[in-house]
Length: 133
Image 1: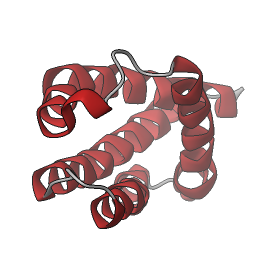
Image 2: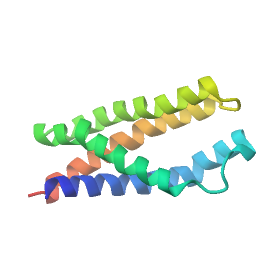
Image 3: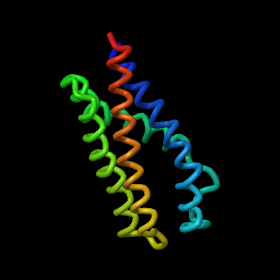
Image 4: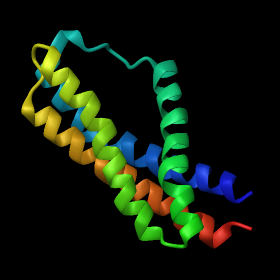
């Protein structure tokens, strides 16, 4: 039951925060930089697969160890590191290989990945501690 609470709480925080950031900041910035190369709307199937697997990876690599150790701040720190690595991989690969990719996009998204993953992992651990059995 604790793992389910951990997954659902982490996913809820991640999805709500990411939806806000995507709609308010990232999509307009990417659209301004990439223009017509962007799809009119995202491929939702691919997004669902990413979110399901990414949250599972966050739990396995970050949240479960922090919960086991009883140190929620460990989830915040290690989540931020994982987020910077994951989002950095995407951003720096695109910057290295795609025309139109900008430093602004790289820096914004890498920082966002770190903050989003760290906060979501920490919130999930806190929820699991509060409501887990």
